[in-house]
Length: 326
Image 1 (cartoon, helix red, strand yellow):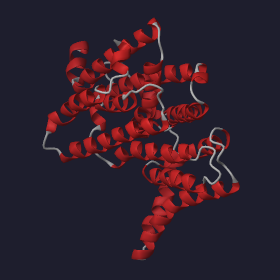
Image 2 (cartoon, one colour; image 1 turned 45 degrees about the vertical axis):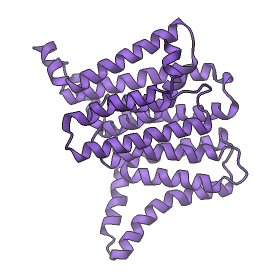
Image 3 (cartoon, one colour; image 1 turned 90 degrees about the vertical axis):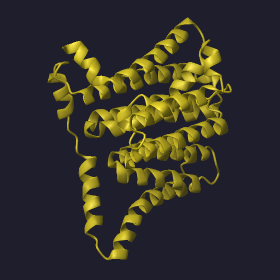
């Protein structure tokens, strides 16, 4: 049954239909929900194309895109469209350019576009710039695409995003917003505050707000299986082609970095959760699709059951908490 589900090509249409009903049904007239749904479907299609082009899974499967859309559907507080909703799509396209530079003799163009997207994303979430050293190391070691020329291209790509803001200021001859944006980015890069974690630790289950219950349960349901998937992928990476193995190493390291950034910058926790959902999709799909044995089958059914329970909990949080703590 597990193999039939994970290798089926009909699982994605089923997930799209069921997920879309859950997504839109609460407020069918809400344009923000429709916008978030459109971005999510576009990102889902992007994962499907990337899986097909890069052969992230050795078997014919739609699990990567299905895992992303189903996981995102389970968290209704991420459904309304906002600028942060575009970050998973930017992450996906950035991966596409990064992976395309693998062992290329002239990788400058690919890395320019990849780091340009990182720069654009940093305008929405400045803490993403902390991924820069990690991605450069990945280009040097895993992708073998970092040269003096490509390093210059990465810096140009990053600076171009700032250049767009500068060009806008030049057009209106008003540099106040430009300087304010630079100051805001600088402040947010060092805005480390663990007050949120202290408040969560000091709160009792009955006094914890419903929104924080949703965040903590959703984050746990994403982080735990993805960490299991990363450990398993490292242990069995020899089964993948070298090229695909390098890609998964990068995705796994970025995933650990995103989790660390979530801990360090909890003020943006919902945005980090959105990125973790997007980044965990190929990791979890790889683990559930390509592994065999009773243990993996158990993990699969536990994950499926947990996803259903998480969806129900996030849609009926206040009612469930009132039953538990009344």
